[in-house]
Image (cartoon, rainbow, N blue to C red; front, side, top):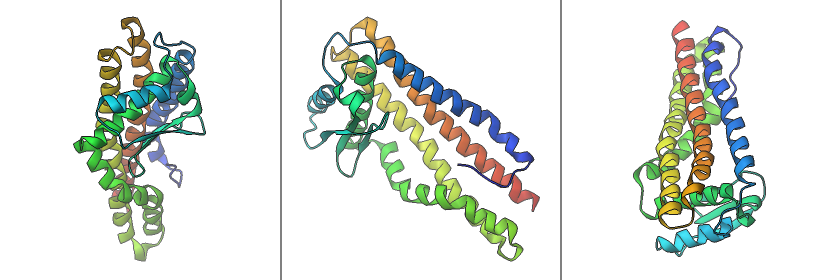
Amino acid sequence: MMFFPLDSTLILLIPAILLSIYAQFAIRSAYSKWSKVRSSLGMNGAQIAQRLLQQNGIYDVEVEEVGGSLSDHYDSRAKKVRLSSDVYHSTSLAALSVAAHETGHAIQHATSYGPLNIRQSLFPIASFGTNWGIWIFLIGMFISSFSFLMDVGILLFAGAVIFQIVTLPVEFNASNRALAQLSTGGYLRTDEINGAKKVLNAAALTYVAAAALAVLHLVRLLILRGDE
C-alpha cells in the first residue's frame, strides 16, 4: 500500500515497514529451516489436511494442489484447501503446519466462526478501499472543489483497515486450532511441536505487520486531512 506524495508524514510508516521486512524474513527463514525437518509421522501436507477435515466431520471440502511458493490458502467459496506443491507433497514439519493452518480456516467456516464471517462480509468493501481509497483521497487533496473526496477516501480506506484488524483473530485462531489438532491428534511428537509453532508464529507476524501498516496509513491520511 504505497502512498504518495512524499512528505514528512512518511516517517509514521517506518516502524511498520521495518516490521513488514522482518516478518517476511522471519517466515521465509522459519519455513526454509523446518521444511528440511521431516515429521516422524511420514504423512504429507495433503494427507494431513484430508485427515483433519475428516476428523472434524467435514466431507464437502477438497484438498487441491496449486502452484507458487507459500501460496497456500482456504477458498471458502469453492470450499477447497489449496496447498502449494511444496506443502502438498512434503512430509516436513513446515508443510504439516501450513496444511493444518489452512485446514483450520475450513473448520472455522464449517463452525461459523464469528470473526471469519465478519471478515468475509467486509471483503468487498476492503478490496475496494485498498485499491481506490487512497486515490480518491488524493483527488480531493489536489482538487479543492472536490475536497469532500478526502473524507470519502478515508472512510473507504478505514474499511480496509478494519478488515486487516479482523484478520488477526482469524489467523491466530486458525494457528491455535492447527497446533491443538496436530498435538492432541498424535500427528506430532512433543519434540516436534516447537518447530510447528515457530512456523505458525512467523506466519502470524506477517498479518500483524500488515495490520500495523494499514493503521499507520490511516493515521497518515487523517493527519493530512487535518492540515487542509
